[in-house]
Length: 149
Image (cartoon, rainbow, N blue to C red; front, side, top):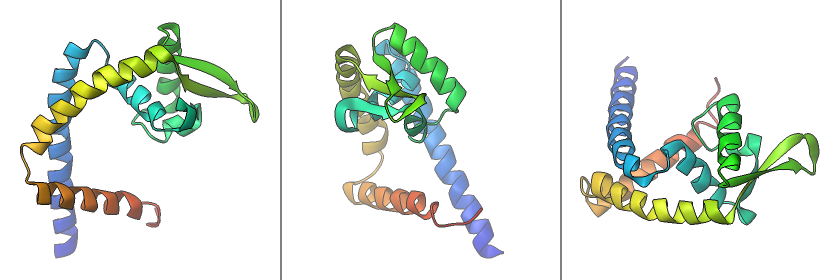
C-alpha cells in the first residue's frame, strides 16, 4: 500500500507541475498570435520527414481527440498553415502536410516558445535536475507501452 500511495503522490506532483507550467505557457502564447493547439500541430508535423503525417498518426502525438483534430486541421488548412491531402495508401484517409507558411509560423513561434520553456522550466531546475527529469519522464512514457491495462 505504501508504494501505491507513493505512486499516487508522485503522479499528483507531476500532474500539478505540468498544469502550472502549461498555464504559464498558454498565457505567454496569447502574444504569439497562434493558439497553442495549432502550434502543437505545426511542431509535430515539423518533426517528421516532409513535414507530413497521416491524420491518425498526428493524433497519436497530440492531446486531442480525432474529431477535434480533424476540425482544427480544417481551420488550419483554410488559413494556409497546413494542406489536407488524400492518403495514397488509404483513400478514406487524410495526410496533413506543413505548408511553407506553416513552417515559417512554427519557426517564429517556436523560438518564442523555447525561450518561455527556458524561463519557466529551465530556470527552476539545475542542469542535472533537467537531465534527471527528462530521463524519468522518458522512462515513464516508454513503460506505458508494456504495462497492461
